[in-house]
Amino acid sequence: MTADDVLEFWFQQCRPWQWFRRRDSFDALVRERFGEAVERALAGDLNHWSCSPSSGLALVLLLDQFPRQIWRGEAKAFAGDPQALQLSLEALERGWIAAESQRPRRQFWLMPQLHSEDVSVLRAVIPLLERHVDEATANVACRHLAELERFGRYPRRNLALVRMSSPEETAFLNAVPGSR
Figure (cartoon, rainbow, N blue to C red):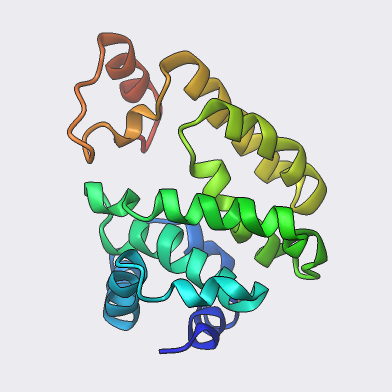
């Protein structure tokens, strides 16, 4: 498994609609093809990929996006978030995101920041999404920010992370289609 294998799969073999729609068959495909690589990334065995923009982005996908497919609805889906966030912030500092010519790649470089439950990280990424991705993705981040400001976390993760939902969070989850 190489970084190029990850990038080719995600950006050339997959269609954008597959990235964000829940589909058991797609989750199974990601698990089958990349489950072992994700485990290696989580264990730190692929940290050397963080030394270049291309392999660094592949590592971000293995830590941030692929676990969400492989372990959907489980706590492990979020296990790579801290590492992916650190890589995303480093890529920003190194100028890798601004230098990336392809919008989808910039989007996935920034995705760990959008996934963060840290309000300050989410506030900071909104203008970056407006600049480097698109208004629609920035609007998603604004909705996430409102949720974080209201609850201090993403209530839709509570079940997977075995967190008790407050009555207000439960009402919110019941009112938002597809949030459970």
